[in-house]
Length: 266
Ligand SMILES: Nc1ncnc2c1ncn2[C@@H]1O[C@H](COP(=O)(O)OP(=O)(O)OP(=O)(O)O)[C@@H](O)[C@H]1O
Ligand SMILES: [Mg+2]
Image (cartoon, rainbow, N blue to C red; front, top):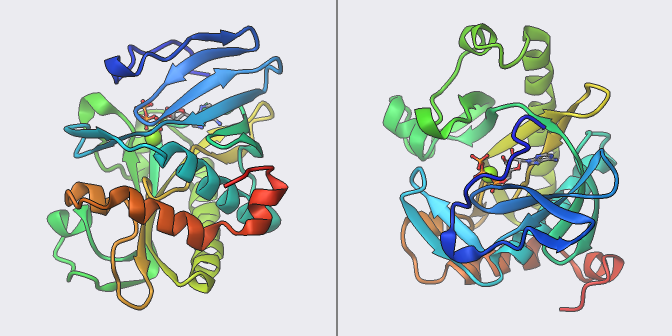
């Protein structure tokens, strides 16, 4: 992995135990998740933490139970995608909060799909608020904290050597398919998928595989009837019920059968 070094933990307070046991060594600590190596070279354990950040890292908090919630939601949505033959990192949910995943060589791209115009798009372009985007817009940002994740186009991406045109075309095609599958699944759960951010990587054979997470931290979900925010926008807006919202979404997406299958007692 390109970033196989222990980054100075973003949250000094969160004392991550690097040597939890012999088979679980921390190889990367991000802003909301930790990545541990396993005995298998091509597998990692992704652990979802309770830390939450927004506004380029300016706004931070720790919300008890958020990591577990996000691990359950992500696992369910990865399973939904796998059923439709979309390649993801997901192997299994080992325990509440920890997902066994394929180790990927991550591409430094934030791949964003938008069905409705809102958020940062309105600051950059004269779209009307809540304007339907059909066909959906796919946009890629350079995942780079130092440069504050600037928006890319294909030419800049290729000139920087981040991906080839073939890889970009494949990523866009997979993202559109993911958008279709997730929009349909979430609609059945009475959730409107407004927009979302994906991260892809390459597996040991060089295949493009969906990694990271699909959670209220990385998607905009709206209540299909009231258009109420059911995602991290609640934190951006400093609402006082952020965890209630995450738990509500978890209950809407994950059902009793999933918990039983994963051996999780709630
Ligand atoms: N399957 C995978 N294999 C290897 N690395 C992964 C995998 N899935 C996600 N990652 C990487 O692990 C990190 C996840 O942690 P987190 O989301 O907390 O990081 P971040 O704060 O968004 O990003 P970063 O710290 O890299 O700027 C990210 O760098 C992500 O690209
Ligand atoms: Mg992240």
